[in-house]
Amino acid sequence: MADSKHQKTSKENLSEKKEEKDMLTKVKCHSNGALSEKLGAFFNESHFHDVVLKLPNKEYKAHRLVLCVWSDYFKEKLQGPSRSQRIRRLCEEWIGSNVGDHNVIGASARLRDAEKLGLVHLTSKCREIFCHYFTRLPESTWNSLSADHVDEILKSSEVVVGDEFHVLKKLETWVQSNGGLEKQTNVLVNTLLPQIRFRFMSAVQLKQVREGPMGEMLKQRLPGVLEDAFEFRAMAGEQAKVSHNREESQNTEAENCVSYKSPRLYFDFDFAGITQSRSSPFRSYRINNYNNESRPAVFFNKDGHCRRDSPDWRFECKAFQDTSGKDDPWRLKFVLSPGDHVQRSYHIAFLIREAKSGGQQPSMGEPELLVLVHKGTLTKEEDNDTTKKITLVTPPIFDKSPREVELCFVCNCFKN
Image (cartoon, rainbow, N blue to C red):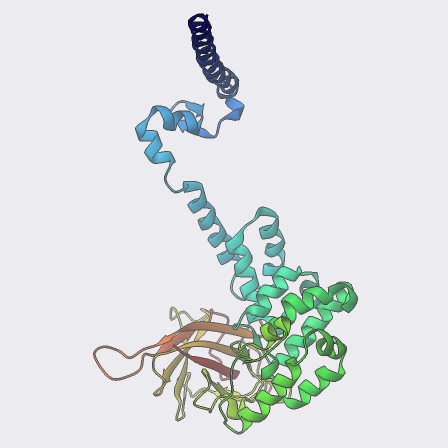
């Protein structure tokens, strides 16, 4: 009886295993068949293609997946970097070159197109122009920028501007045009205000900030930020060593806001003792302040050449033509020879404007104010002990050789 029962159990187990095997086989085969059948309907339709094979007199619409499965040649070709991405990048660069480095209005229009089409490099190019011509950016363009664009601009150390206070005032106009403080508080506290270099404002300007529309918000949401800036200014004026990070901040928002950030290219701000302290991570040099009251001119001799020497820099400027035709436009070439400040990275900006004096007819076309920005690293040449020269050349925007130009040169050097 027991043997009969054992035999029956064994037969049941064998039967169950066979049924399970048959079921799995059927499922597997059915799945492959169904998948092939379903996919086949798509692969046989040309409008689902993602590759076009072109011959001299004919073209075939195909599918990347099928070609890769059945051909090692196509697998190698189609799994490499996308050629379309390289072409897209070249197209973006070409569009950017047509915008020009000094065309603020063109950059404003192209930025909208770049956003719609997801053109990352062109978007970055437009923002770069906005940084260089920050003071000339139309209010309507600035106020229409998204918070992300404003953030990227405020992050940049290549913003060419009179001083940091001007940057904050520009931010205030953006806030008022985009819903006011009540609507933009979180964006300001978490994203935008941490990009403001409060330490590079004067004590008078910091006092105005404290008493201005953002003063109360800074006090409540970013406590210690203005106090840190006041402390920095006072200690830097004594050429004392200043910590670049607040060591015992108990407020993460405030800590992010006061951490050291590189200065921008300020053309109307006196760093005083800040840049002369040996503990400072940067040094700033400038030829001439540039504002409505102070626009010093540079005069050229009859050969269209001028030169200035200082303990820090040798500065030379020369007017020239690409060709010697009488009606060909003129450029300016600037050559800077730094002194002993070797092994430092630098950001440099020239602000150039034709001086209007003595009843002379203007020879400079658009833009009325030209901004040149460059960055690099100062290194010593291998074959001699002189420091590498920095050369910048303007576009051909002068109708004739200029006799006098208003010029401001700003350079921030950073320890490597």
